[in-house]
Amino acid sequence: DVYEGLRDEILGQLRAAMPVDCVVLGLHGAMVARGLDDCEGDLLARVREIVGPEVTIAAELDPHSHLTPARVRAADILATFLEFPHTDFEERAEHVVDLALAAARGAIRPVISTFDCRMIDIFPTNREPVRGFVDRIRALQGRGRILSISLVHGFPAADVPELGTRVLVVTDDARAEGDALAERLGREVFAMRGRTRMPVAEVETAIARARTRPAGDGPLVLADIWDNPGGGTPGDNTVLLRALIEAGIGSIGAALLWDPQAAALAHAAGAGTRLEMRIGGKTHHTSGTPIDGLFEIRALADPGWQSFRASRVTLGRCAALRLVGTEIDILVGSNRTQVFEPDLFTNLGVDPAAKAVLVVKSTNHFYAGFRPLASEILHVGVPGCYPSRPETAGYRRLARPIWPLVEDPFAEEGADGAS
Image 1 (cartoon, rainbow, N blue to C red):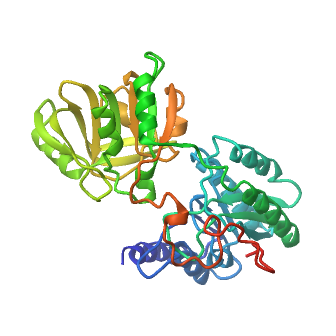
Image 2 (cartoon, rainbow, N blue to C red):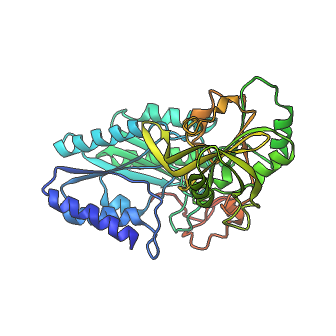
């Protein structure tokens, strides 16, 4: 009902604006609703029904999306952000708009080609080999009749038939060239399988590094990557934070724990108050147990916010809570969101650069903002409810063989990735 209500509001606005020269949409691409696997494909198809076959439809997608036949049928132009962390979504939005306007003027005739890489993996662009691959496709884009190239990473937390990585190429009326390029690049991506994701440290390794980090070099940043609310997790796992506290690490900044009850109590009590509280560890059997203690309410915000590039992400009702007798500050909020930028801390009066250790609930989007102040960054794998290992995720609805569930998904006779 929620999706259909939002969809129908958008479609109603489009009908009221008709006739239009083109339609440009900013979509994520991994939305799933009860009874509907492909919300964005449904939206695009309905937009096409309204505007007819001659009007250009273009959409920008998050790379952590699904690329489905319904979307390719309905749209003339599709492109994703190229960077992960997503530092280029404004640039890619301008790219999509420029192509849409050119198509609407008749200057280009966009044709979409795709290749199914038949794999599930993580593709951070701040490290090799993905950095080099993205640089190469940026260089290829705009040559000759190649209008746009994208790598669709996929969204591993969704059990849908089209889950997986794909290469997406848009050409100026050059389907054969686009198909060939999509396949060549797609097979390059498949050849990188198992080498793209960032190294993941165990909790014990993170604790050892926290104990031995040199003083004065900037904080050790520990990313609690499998409790990233951007991937649908609760955001209240306390396992890593508890291990640091029990190891005697006395200077910690942790954000953002989703704990609306704690945030409400803090706001009711007021800044400067001390309360016995239970923080986090409340939603799932893998979330750990609450951090119990006497906390001083250091700062409050309603709504709190953090930056994400030029945008603001609202955090709901927030509080900075100091574990009395320590330099441990835990930031809680009523909105579930991952950490993007250090200003999440500074907006609540916590200086992240002054901490020995920072714990951030994010997979990789934090990286661009925190790299300049960190002495070291570790991606820490705390077991939780996120399907961090595709081999054991228990997918039931995949429509074709896919790595790493199958060692060589292209081995079947006649198998290819064209779609």
